[in-house]
Image (cartoon, rainbow, N blue to C red; front, side, top):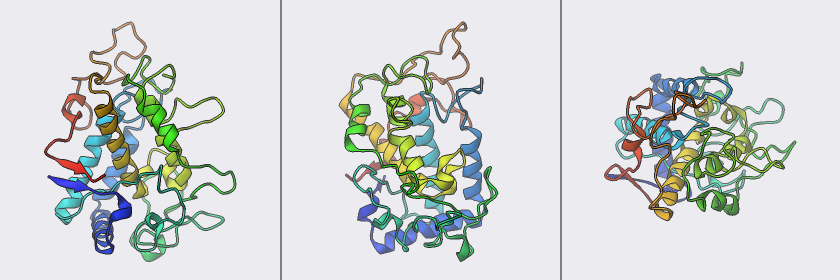
Length: 288
């Protein structure tokens, strides 16, 4: 079993090993395959087909398996590497150590938002974006969106999600506003005065490539989702009597029939059910 650390506690050597392993996966083509997988399973509500990665109950177990698959590849490059997590309720500055030259690099420059610093700057020759809907071949960010400022989620916003004892609710999509931890944490169930909360708000705060289905083009994606995974852990500990929903598939007359994953239905592309991803005992632990 290995440990996922808070990124702010990483040593210079640990940061270097993590970024070096990510760069190797980029070099050998593995990284871009992961970006394509995420894009394939980023299915919005309006598309009347199976939703497994987002806007659905399987958001948490699907991403847990997705991160595990990526981490496995990282550890084949360097067995001492794991995915760090970014607690975006406490580490909120665009100039924090997360965005330093020796780790993920900083925000994009004015004009085209091209990231110019750090190991993932296109100018360094090791990070060319090949998967996505934009034409830019360079990584883009717009931390905090200065032209129309947005803040990272607060501890209070996160608490709103963690306090909900129900995992998810009908209609099991982005419109499930009456309740449900999943939708409140994923971020669609925001007040009318806001567009996003929690997970979604982080993607918008980073900006650039983090705002669409090909968000893993930005390596901060993995640190963001490692924290989302940790938050799921915290919710389970807070509500031990609450389980994954729906436990059984919606009936045939339900509009969500065949569009969401129940507890024991297989999640593509791995063919494993959410039940198998309800904990990570024996795999990894979080340093808190």
